[in-house]
Length: 285
Image (cartoon, rainbow, N blue to C red; front, side, top):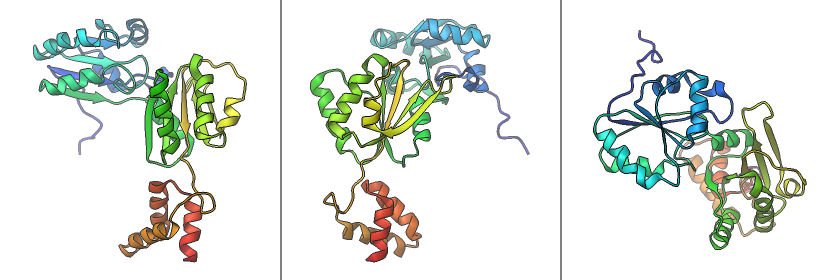
């Protein structure tokens, strides 16, 4: 029987490959990603200096083309023409998965609209890595970097305050202190958060605790940070949750054969309430 992992990794003509790169540790770069990048006709790079250093480290010698947020629109027609002519092109960002809060989304959309082929070689993602370390339940929302315009920023912060699920933010070190201050003022100092910094590197840091404690730590911020905001918790004594209705929804699921614990977990996750308190209410009523 053939090994499902034993397959050819040949790059196909006329295809844009969206290729994940390491977020810090070079050992996280997959063999498939390295093999494919060595075959393409050119690599579209957010910063050719960063990508060039990565490529040299693993012996990849392929032409690099600058592709970043300031030249996206002028580059796209050229890229589409090269793909239509049968070239094999790869899109990378400095770290992690391209087109995820990085340049590339507009290009991928344009390739689809042109009827050309897109393929993805998955790799590390700072957002997913941090959420996996948080211990917070799914689902979650990824915001990327907060807007810099004050009015739009306030609107997003209000949405973050009211959103019942876990949330992921990226932030640059020079804006981290202000972002934490804004979040404390909006969502409250007691909200549980996880900080991910220098992930997969030698000085990796994961910290979990109240948002207010992180905001008042008086620390010097270095390196891009990922902040995971835990879901807002509602309790019978402090919020207008209709516990009778939630318990009724649990009973509807159990009537269809779902175990009570699983039904409670699902409803608590969907509604942003405490699983333990919902389970206790369900048992009592």
